[in-house]
Image (cartoon, rainbow over all chains, first blue to last red; front, side, top):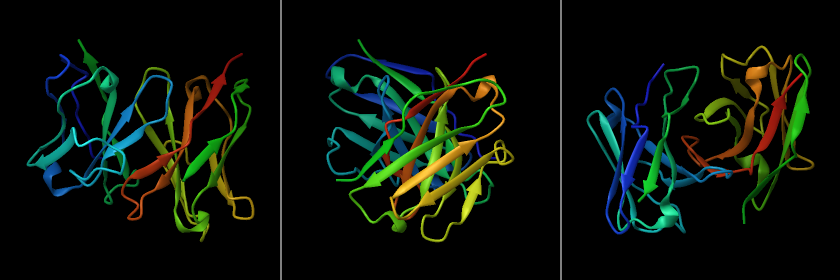
Length: 109
Length: 119
């Protein structure tokens, strides 16, 4: 089945830019979706179809996808952005079509 | 507004069954599939399966397909996930999540239900 690889952790100072990567074989040919999960809460969709944002998600959150790496970028990081972030793709060639990365913990210094 | 409200904490012994509910509101329930995703303590997200409320079609992850049954009740806009023969490693928070329009991602999630398996 398809495998997504994320770094376990990313640290960033307030006001700076955090970049969270999601690696996969030719992931650029798939749509990548990103979720934010704060402790004790359900995941929240922050980016879908590589770079679209749901209503209510600040434009500080952006996404890109090319080659073997997709990236979620958080600009002007705030303390409230501290959370786990999961990437996800839909792999219709598998009997396990919804694949998640292991998650990246973002720490705001 | 779209809401998915799940049932409360469950504590079960090994070998027992659990049935978690997910009541939807704020949209046309038959129109969107419902998925179940679980998260073991300190771990990532694991997709368990999907059900279409309109057709009843289901697709289960191979890992749990022998022990799980997903169902819906369109008269109450509620989805259910039953897991049988519980094991210690089934201890997790179980989330229901609504399909997006193209069913490639999950646009709304329930608040989660902790299922603890303990002797």
